[in-house]
Length: 126
Image 1 (cartoon, one colour):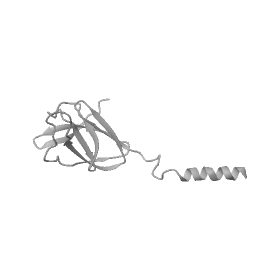
Image 2 (tube, rainbow, N blue to C red):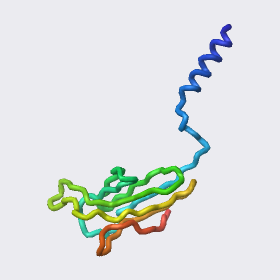
Image 3 (cartoon, rainbow, N blue to C red):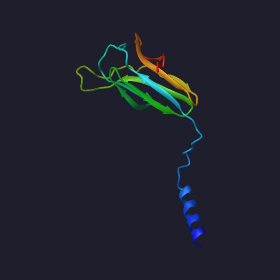
Image 4 (cartoon, one colour):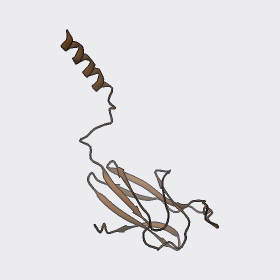
C-alpha cells in the first residue's frame, strides 16, 4: 500500500512538470556587442527581438541571448534616456533576420552607416 501511494505521488509530480522543458533541445547563443565606438552617440540603444524590447546597450557593453533554433527578427532603436539629447529617432532601422542552428554561438556588433544602425558579424575572440 505504501509503495503504490509513493508511486502515485511521484507520477503526479512528474505530470506537473512543464511540457516545454526538454533537455534534448539545444539552443543557439547570440551575442550583441557595442564594445567598439562605431556608433557616434552616447545614447542607449534598444535591441528588439521579434518586435519586443529584449535588451538595452550603452557604450562598451555586450549582451547574450539563448534562442531555440530558427529565424530571429532583430531591430535596433535609440531609446529615450537620462542623457541629454537622447530622443528616439523618427525612422526605425530596418529589420535584420538571423537564422540560428542548435549549438551556434554567433556574435554581432552594432555599427552605423548613412541609413542607420545595423548588426555586423564579428569574431568571437575568446
